[in-house]
Amino acid sequence: MSLFGSMTTAISGLTAQARALGHVSDNVANSQTVGFKRTDTNFVSFLTDSTQVVHRPGSVVARPDYTNTVQGTIEQSENPIALAIAGQGFFSVALPTGTTNGQTTFDERQFFTRGGDFQMDRNGYMVNGAGYFLQGWSVDATGEPDRTQIQPIRVSDLVFNPIATSSIELSANLPAGSVTPSATPLNIYDSLGTIQPLILTWTPGAANVWTLDVSAAGAGGSLGTIDLNFGAAATPAATDGTIGEFANATGTMSGAATVTGDPALISFTADFGQGPQNITLNIGAFGAARGVTQYAGEEFELRNLAQDGVPLGAYSSTTVRENGDVAINYDNGQARVIARVPVTTFNAPDMLQRLDGQAFMRTLESGEARTTDPASNGAGRLSVGSIERSNVDIAAEFSKLIVAQRAYTANTRIVTASDEMLQDTINMRR
Image (cartoon, rainbow, N blue to C red; front, side):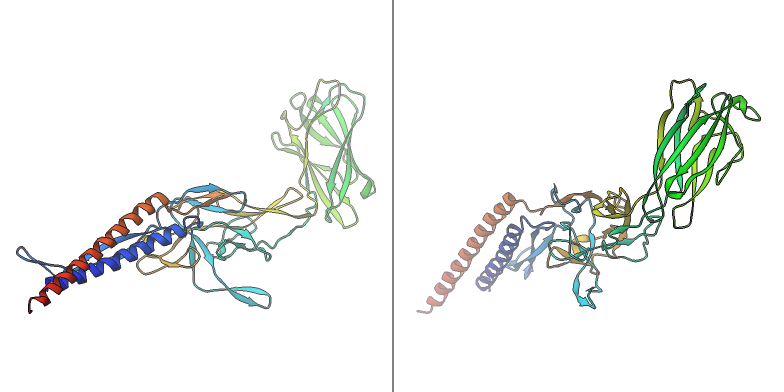
């Protein structure tokens, strides 16, 4: 029994070492595969009989020991939308199954991966090198993600509609005692995104009084005038050099009521051919030395001039932010967030089912998938413009290769010795 047992045990050793060699072979072959997780070997013994007085040879089985939780090296990439996870977690991805009416259809099952070498395909989807489509949460107009559903991220908003100017902010100093008018040119946008020149003309009047005239050639010329009373010229008097009140408004101009500390707002209306466009000019605050002031100076001093209108914008690029927001950038300087990339974690990630293309599926042993924002609830943070390399160490794999080869050779010697001893046993009959 012991001779046969020794032979069968050695044969199980040959099988186990062959499997270990297969694991090493798989690891070495995928040493440069993005997001690949190596497979180690766990040898498990099975006993036939083992007591204090007798031990009969059993067998050995080689089981895979997965390393899904072992971080690979994070490497910088020239691809701006490449992603890596620093820490625990996986990207949620979808597997395409074909097209219906020109639209890509996807497998209903959920897949996960660490392979973040995403590129934009011709339909605007973010796809990694293995063909899996990155999934994320859609966002509303305020940029808040809808965490109730996850779907493939698609960049489809290639145009940013123009925004008509509705607010202008101005900060300047009008020189006290000046008798010379000053003009401030400004370009604003109408509802079609067309640039419309605007001129703000400041004309000194009585002491501490300036008259503002707003004119737009595209809207027929002057839109109206309004007086700005500074310091003692206001009723009641304000701090010297600060706006105290508005007076004598004409045309479409109107000024806010005087309340110390409140914004000093002037409203006017312009019609550039698409109907009335209401615009608010913010020139500081009543009784406060900010915005437009009147202090000593040789000439008009413009400090800041800004407006909130934007022209028509065309698609420029796509970026992913560290919080997972996927934003489209346009050539008019604007950006729009269209989705957020979450990170999915498991209680036992080494128990996930492995699939082709460095992908995984949930199993009963892995536990439920928990999808959350990056860098929260135990999920790793996103490293943008980076990829995670394989966690295979070539030097360690060659060490395992040598050990497996020698162990395999040793098991063949056991088989040979058992065979010779069995032959001697048979020859005893002669």
